[in-house]
Length: 224
Image 1: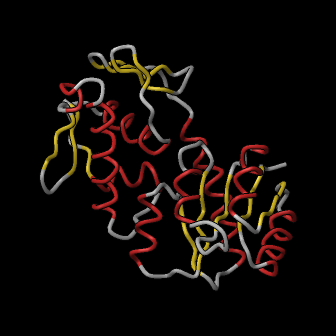
Image 2: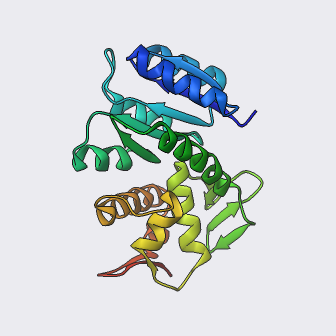
């Protein structure tokens, strides 16, 4: 079995087609047509990937995206909303990839497999400590002055990238590659949003550590 997939889609024809194709590839697939039931299924099965329609009958798909992205589950947004702004908002909320309807089934399968591979990047590559900020690899969590940081998976990857390259400017392109593997629309804005959130969470514990993330205008960020 390659992994568990949760489809959150209110169109039964689309859901059934996606489910059948994924099952042929060896995935264990679950389907919910409403967001409220999808939340319960999500907690029960802990899927590797969620394929999420943004236009659901009972809840806002963006709200679900925000909830799912707080976990280690990868989120693929599948939607008829094809405006770049909708894609950008989804990515800012934590989506890992997106496809717009109508879509090619082979491309969907390829993207799901790519997300499964990318999930492996969350595995810690060893402990790190810079000042009062420490990455405990066995827990896959950062601590600041002994207090755990409540980071999303993408925030975790970005902070680890900055600390691993302490003193060097890390470009926005490098950061976006770390969390998505490819460029996405308006990636500068998306990176800046994540950096803001990381700084805010660091500042809640220690402002001096938050201030060590320096903006290098026109290039990227550096952890001093």
